[in-house]
Image (cartoon, rainbow, N blue to C red; front, side):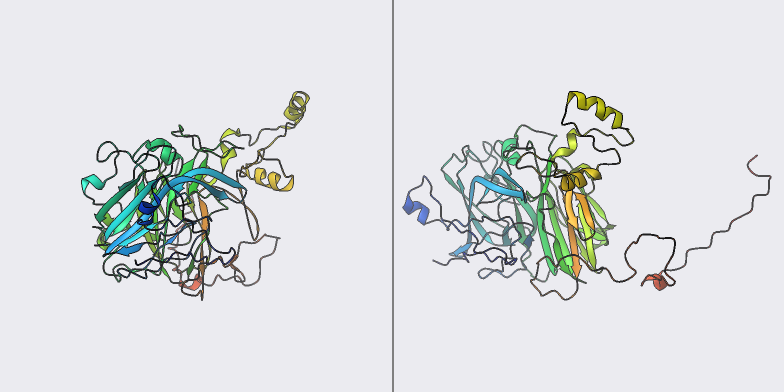
Amino acid sequence: MEQAKLTRRDFFKLAGVAGAGVAISSMSKVAMAALPEIISEEKANTQAPLHPETGRPYHPVVTLNGWSLPWRMKNGVKEFHLVAEPVAREIAPGMVAHLWGYNGQSPGPTIEVVEGDHVRIFVTNRLPEKTSIHWHGQRVPNGMDGVSGLTQPLIMPGKTYVYEFEAKRAGTFMYHPHADEMTQMAMGLMGSWVTHPKNPKFMAVDRDFIFLLNAYDIEPGSYTPKVNTMLNFNLWTWNSRAFPGIDPLVVNKNDKVRIRVGNLTMTNHPIHLHGHEFQVTGTDGGWVPPSARWPEVTTDIGVGQMRAIEFVADALGDWAFHCHKSHHTMNVMGHEVPTLIGVKQADLVDKISNLVPEYMAMGETGMAEMSDMAAMMEMPLPENTLPMMTGTGQYGAIDMGGMFTTLKVREGLAKHDYQDPGPYQHPKATRAYAYDGNLPEVRSPPDSQHIKPAVEVQIRKPTGHEGH
Ligand SMILES: [Cu+2]
């Protein structure tokens, strides 16, 4: 029996061997042994792209803080084994969430296939409740669409179902349950799917990233999401990670870069990239013809939608890449803190302190002091709770949380090097600086000679007759 690669390489080299485990099921050992081995992942960091050793060739994607699921070829069929199960997912250092996921993590592993592949997916349910899987966006026979009750019976706990279809259309897809959806998606059951084009040269890029937008409602000090929340989520995540837990997207200068994003939250996310203009090259329905693309620096991704953006990374630096809703770049505490900018709290504190001895004023000059305070005074947070705004760069506090990371553009990276290169060293005279009353004698930004002079504005002197 031909087996796909069973080990995971960890290119961050920080940790040892990834956890590949064979698990137990209510199914007989003989029946279980006939299935593709269950491969699961214990860690939440970005894994090296999975280069195909069997089947048709393709350029693999890099799943942000995630990995791709190995398969086996059996009589020309590409076989995968997904296991829905409770998992512990580190959201960021200092916080672990008790979620539901697939094969050890939430989101589950990315599934990569090639247009025209005959695909068979075994789905084993180790959740305490029934489930199903829907292959969001794909052309499948109706009975493979995974809508429990409508197209198939529920997959009961302990049972394994088989889905089988041809990957018809190249593109970016998602998978998620279509059974008790509100609960199961609120718990993190979801994953990405990429169907690569049959011709590996079609729209080839140098670096191809993928992640899902997701959200949780986890009370400070607790571990498990509240599953009845419809709108008031307090943890905004990319692949179930919040800043500073989201890895940077590391690329070579002048790389052609694609970033694929799917939205499985209950609201839209305007995703914004600094320093570059991109084009939306893919949507839920397929690739956008070149004549229909337009440049953007922010693209809004609606609920249930997928987008692929592309650009040439021609500007060196550490560029912010984030959701532009500011409460989505914060962690849990944000919602309960009142607006106090401009409010003189000194008197108030005295009065309140008489009643509540631990009372501390905050937010008088803005919310950023919260992150300074938490760091400097070690303001106690409940156990297993992330600070509202956090992260430190080479110049100090970044004051971000949630859906925020960086695009790091560097020169001379090796082909498959995705390791964090550390902070960008800004060339002389290219960084904002403190004004001390003197300007340097010569200050000519490197690109200034290429910028066309602005049209001269004619300023007319008032004649005294106008405006009266
Ligand atoms: Cu957002």
